[in-house]
Image 1 (cartoon, one colour):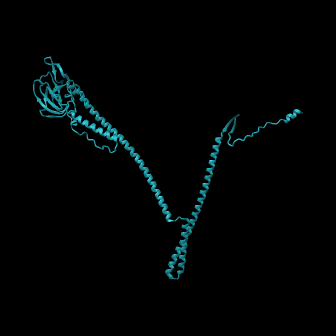
Image 2: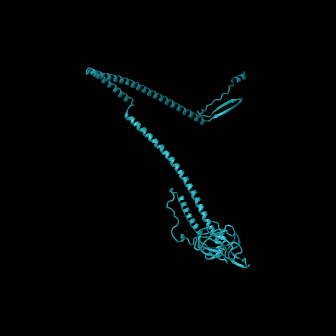
Image 3: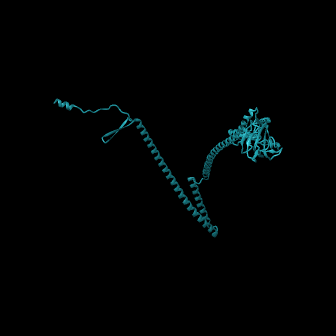
Length: 411
């Protein structure tokens, strides 16, 4: 019995929670599927965010509903006013038509019966005054025919329209200005590219001429001579220089102005060197030839002894044309069967002279002025010669120099 009482006295376990949990404490959601359970925990922060979002949605919904209801009332009220105004307008027009009809009748009756209908005329005048009062009342209540307000609204609308037009024109001008700036930039770049190419071509030409002068000075230095193309230049003795306009570019770009100034200077140098090179015999006096005797010491073709040779022998066919390779003036023409045979001497200036010997025919006479590549005669076999050839000499400052560097110079 005691055992039973003990069993009966045993109470079921029921835990009691005395601590209060916060409202936004972590929540757990359990999903069971196919004998498996998944637990999703919702943190306090997420709960607060969700509640805030719900409150914002509710507030926005309430505000939207309120504005919708209010706008509906406003529209209903305006519709009612419009209906009332329309009805008043219809009544007014009806009264006006009736009065107009009565006035016509009165006028016609006045013409017929004179002053008998004067009372009716006064009656119609009173009716017209009533209609006029109705018009004033309608315009005063509804405020739709106020000329002052209509003019003000028209002025405001016109000002707004002009403002919109000005803004659109301003934006269009800004776009055009941006396009113009881009175009100017492209023009500047194109100008710089063109100017650079022009300057490069001019510099290349100047360098080519200077290189030719350097090559002939190599042989001249061996004989203690030196040719300075600027020695007789007016550029050294006189003041002045290339014409460089103060403002050569309307774009006002310093880089472009500097580049154009550099081009002017290079072009001036090129013009000067081209003028100088015309007085220096550079090139081949005979197009087709082979060298049979060089400048300097050689074996004499007749007595086989060592002898000096003041020029270079260029073997060629009889009758081949002989050309001068620099402008000048003929200072000697000699026809002979001895020594140089038929020969011509040309003075090119700047200290240079050339001799053409053993010629078959001579086309020029003493005192003639020659241009570059003018033909002065034909290759021959006159004088002390073993065969048809041109004996070609180049003299500088009165001394014979090796013609080969002058013939090989490239310009």
